[in-house]
Image: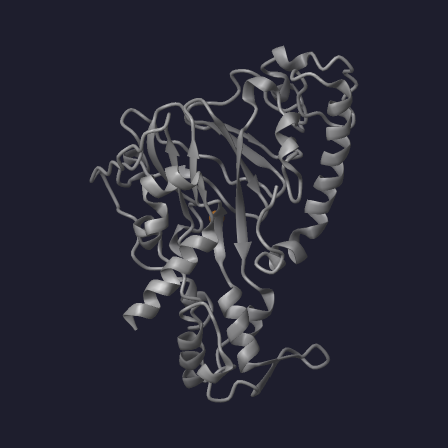
Length: 347
Ligand SMILES: [Cu+2]
């Protein structure tokens, strides 16, 4: 499923469209088959699956029998630490609707989705090369972008054109356009970044872009414990694009997660498991705390989209356990806007 405006995820769509499209088409076919069968006993199936009774839900290990994992998980397939990972068709990939959950066996059916995203406009990298922009231009662009809203009159020469690229493939943008691209950059994130679930609920994490994981802040990962007491060192493998990871939340409380490759860019998230009350956030000093710095500007040659660090994400008002419970889910956009607004007041 997806909920973000096309503009915010345009890079996702351009770069990953072929895969997302293929999954979408396959998912549509699979859903039609399942809906035709009716009943909640159906499991996610491949086109090749000849089972017309949809009764293989009782076979908990069916997915392990198929090297493509296309039969999907069955009962007991979600490990309390490692969840259930699949490189196979994700019925909830891309633009699928909420009925994608129906493709899963009832025993493991998710009731929430979190998407793993990268929104880094490709054009930006061409301009984020040494010697393309002067330090004065970079400083001015960063200042204009800091609050997330770029006005032409914040720039001394907004229509000045900058050209990059090899002969015949040049790209030209104005200073204003570069600033606008930077402001649209929301980089590496979970969507939603804050989520409330009930004990026993299954969450599906959908890899819309590559190289993401989901790991709990846990002492056995060398970090502060930021999960309820007794909860283990939860972690997903790197989830391949178009694939998914399922996790069942049982113990009430607040769970903080990071994406191992992208935590340094602020890619973290919080899940609150509750029957209705607002649980306390518990932090034990068992290891490293979340980083206070977002290093994305280092990768963009000083261009700074002003995004929160992992520590700043967790400190945001939008991600207090109380707000997450009140809202049900909190979008990354909300956290980014709060952070950029806060920076503006300080300036
Ligand atoms: Cu990531």
